[in-house]
Amino acid sequence: MRTVIVFVAAYVIAFAAASGDEATIERAKSEESFACVQCHSLRIVHSQRLSKTAWTKEVDKMIGWGAPVRDRQLLIDYLSEEFSDAKPMPEPDRSKDGTKRSSIISDPAKAPALKD
Ligand code: HEC
Image 1 (cartoon, helix red, strand yellow):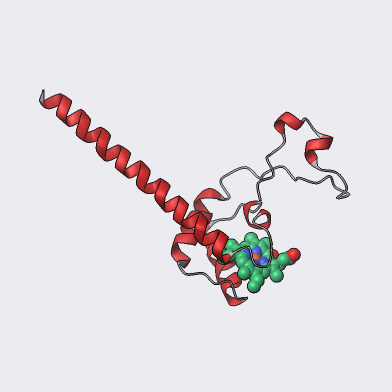
Image 2 (tube, rainbow, N blue to C red):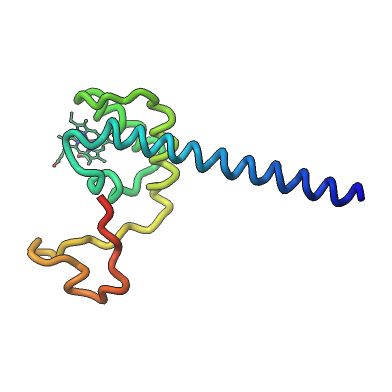
């Protein structure tokens, strides 16, 4: 019986931790769409793969240019986690001459979704 309680408790704690992360990511995304879309689309942000140091400089540069960031640290943590230089670069969504979308020139099934 005690084992069952321990398992249930572990499950509840693990679930709470995971949903906490979800909530943090959601908050960071809404911060991003509040502060980072006035001058350019999010594609220019999401196509980067940077270290935490580089994301810190990038966010500070954008703040210097007028980005209305309310929670700087949240945004830096989110960007350096989701768009880290340890992750593979996304496929370019234009051909080299800029005339065609990669979904047209390569296998559409493998083309990245254009989100923003
Ligand atoms: C006041 C306008 C403005 C806001 C707000 C803004 N940016 Fe930018 N951003 C720019 C300009 C201008 C460029 C350069 C665009 C270009 O080179 O075509 C740029 C480019 C970028 C780049 C490409 C790399 C670079 O430095 O050129 C990234 C990444 C970026 N912004 C991230 C962000 C993030 C993250 C936010 C939100 C915190 C943000 N931007 C908000 C103006 C802004």
